[in-house]
Amino acid sequence: MIFKLIPAYKGYLWGGNKLKKDFNKDCEENIIAESWELSCHKDGQSTIGTGKFKGKTLKNFLEEENYRPLGENCVEFSEMPVLIKLIDANKPLSVQVHPDDHYAKQNEGQSGKTEMWYVLDAEPDSKIYYGFNRNITKEEFLKRIEDKSIMEVLNAVEVKKGDVFFLEPGTVHAIGAGIVVAEVQESSNVTYRIYDYDRKDSKGNHRELHVNKAVEVLNFNKQRDRYRFGEHIAKCKYFTVDEEKVNGVYNDEATEDTFHSLLILKGCGKIQCGEEKLELKKGDSIFICAGSGKYTIEGRCNLIKTTVEK
Image 1 (cartoon, helix red, strand yellow):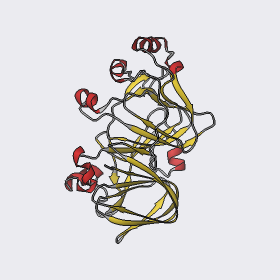
Image 2 (cartoon, rainbow, N blue to C red; image 1 turned 60 degrees about the vertical axis):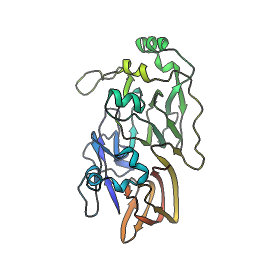
Image 3 (tube, rainbow, N blue to C red; image 1 turned 90 degrees about the vertical axis):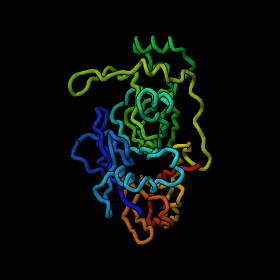
Image 4 (spheres, helix red, strand yellow; image 1 turned 30 degrees about the vertical axis):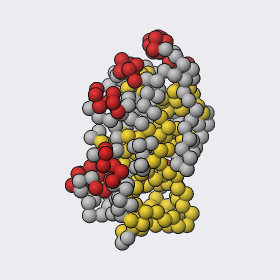
């Protein structure tokens, strides 16, 4: 069984219009910061957009099917383990950190957040902040938060289209202005904001910071070199991400082990699985249930495929 998903939209103050303009997102809001393309999280759920389950949330569909469409590799999670987003950083995101599963479940009642970014667009000289540029102490960190000099010790990396970043929990990070990314992450919305450039929200209030919790989960050591995953662009217990470039015909199979999530990043085509057929265009999010069997994509398109592998 395959179907298109309709995302949940987020209009955070740093968003822009590239998701609407470049990725065909149909949203009434002028500013779209994030589109949650594959999500069963309570803070924003994807909706099925085609087929006999059209209009039902993905979460409700999975619950009614006892989560079997996720596949055998997801049994240990007992729910959808992945959340996939498109992010348009028209302005810089806050400097932030995410906790690991143990801390998040004890203190927030949900999972931590391991995540990866795939850069889809980057304006000249745009940067991602990814870990510290040297080892620092908790005391220095708190002093730099107080005197607003924290940016001086962050590892700033100029980015280009196609770059990939894998972020373990505890890694301080921020996406700079002028960058669009696809983000694959654990199904969690726990973020500890560290620094927000003294910005104010629509009501004139400074956004809340979470420094006390951040210091309990931060890795204060210098950022290691970027991760390499061999044939995959990212792989961990929660998700495996592959880039596929279709130039004619692409064949794959959704076994009983795992669902397949396809996010179309460029081009167009069509997908067929059994008797089911869907047209594909840039920005489409496709969910293929575990056990659906062989499927074929015809056309010219680039996509990222997310699965859960052992």
